[in-house]
Image: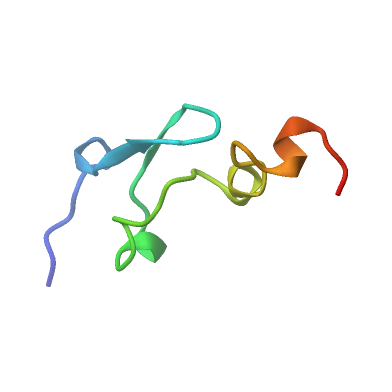
Length: 57
């Protein structure tokens, strides 16, 4: 059985949209290297997209 970890011991990243730090989650276990955004909202509003710049498509 795996040893328990404290939340403070988990890896963190900085969100590419909002710039806030976020911690590792179990659902990101296999794709942690590819995760760039802290939430679905930040992923939808990623920099350079039409939604982020206020433009209509």
